[in-house]
Image (cartoon, rainbow, N blue to C red; front, side):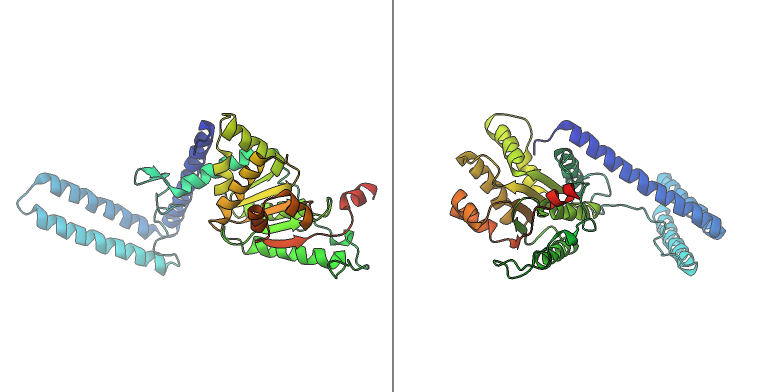
Length: 326
């Protein structure tokens, strides 16, 4: 992935901060044990002495050095076992003072078998996603701020067979369920309805929930993303946005149908959506178009992918007008 060099610098800094934070926890734990269990500190000194003796014996090359080393190692292991027992007797886990690593695979080095570790790539993608999201309203919406009382609860929508309030209550529940059960794999949500009905609000509420859990989420309006992709793929602009949007944990595409209706944009849109669906990577896609509008605008292969997602129909009156007039 051809990412900006500064992304790597930021990612490496975060990895370094992670190591320092874990080391601080280790140091605090060791200080706690030394204060509460003085005997443990004495045993650590004895353990250090046995290690020194093992090194000295190996260096001496004495005729019986092998037997001395084996005996010292047995003594060392017995002492370690005794120290673990002392910790458990005092109410601590036996491995309470073991080194702490956020990633057990690379031990927080960022590399594994000569390549970047998955954990570092995740940090790198998150840094790049944050930059891509820097101009989006990701911090403005939550489930708690979604106001169901803005939706009429008397007149039944003839097409949906329920009041807008009841429909939106179900939609809110589906979005909460999506966020609560999110794993980075599985189905996506396709939100349809007129402007001002809460599609963007609920999309961003899901995004905020998942970002707090540590997932990499990219949010963007379809017109803006396609303009960026078009510049990178056809006009030699730097960056690899396609890799970012196809590899992040959740991609949110807002305002589908507002982009220029060109073959090139439709091709980029299909590539983006198909790449994720082929690997069961979820998306949330919002549109103001109805089913007829989508069918007319997009080819069958894209139409079928959109409607393979869980469809949420939004109804009611433009809530932005209500909020502005109240």
